[in-house]
Amino acid sequence: FYTCVVQILYNLAFIQAIAQISYNTTQNQRLGWKLYASDAQGQMKNIGVIFGMAIDYLEHSGLYLNDDDLDSSVKSKEWTIEDLNVSVQNMCLPFLRIAALLQSHLYNKESLHIQDEQEEFYKLCRYLNLISSSCSAAEFSPSQCLNWATDKPEDLIKTWCQDFINFVNKSVVAARNMLQRPTVWHPPSLLQLPENYDQIFQYYHRRSCTVCHSVPKDPSVCLVCGTIVCLRDNCCHKQSVYEAVSHSVVCGAGTAMFLAVNSSTIIVIRGKRACLWGSVYLDSFGEEDRDLKRGKPLFLSKERYSLLQQQWINHSFDHTNKRWVWHKDNL
Image (cartoon, rainbow, N blue to C red; front, side, top):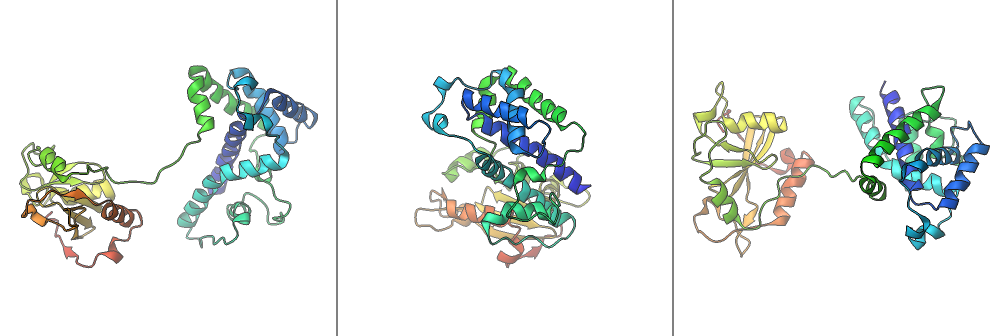
């Protein structure tokens, strides 16, 4: 079942890459590829045929620019079958990496170790069962991984192209930008904090809790979603579980980081344990001011905040923090 899902999504990613490449072609080039597809009609594992077919479907949408509006580098580029293979391979590689990582987690399979970048795409396709074991790396191309679950893959490609044409008709500028600048998937990140700690203090120290609607004695801000909680106050506890602990379960499956506004320290909750991580706000000498006793201006340490974020993303709190205590649901 998983292989089937990956196969269908790979086919879609392949066509998306083809559409993106076709945007950077001249009118004569598009005509040439359409004729190529017509001469070799029916060869649905030939990347040139699929390229010409997609161009034929998209050409009447108003997507493509006139030759006069193209950059000189685009005009001088002559696309070959080899060029198409290399470009499609690079565009589909991020999807294959994610699919392989997910497969290794779902089925407890040994993760794939790749030393030669030139063979990464081929080995990922083998790992995901997109190609047979008899296909060697020397004769491999991305189009060999296509396996259409229909007798008429042309109709499926036409449907996908028509969906994109509908988007073009709504906003041709947005559609062109999507092809020019492909989507970049950013990793999870914590809140963007202001440079000056006084901004946080002035905003949160008299702010009401969204649950009990009173001003918390020790307001704390979740660094993942920005929710303010009543730390160590029993006003918002449910079934003997205090608000910060219950929020850590809802927001981070048991892991959460809170900025204690009145002390500038970071409190990390990890399951049944908690610890004082330290502060990401330092004075001009690079020192912490816990509990704000010295009253000196504090400024965001980007290095510390980046370290906190990396520990969160890498799930390394258990290994990097040593002074854990049992919070007994009282946070």
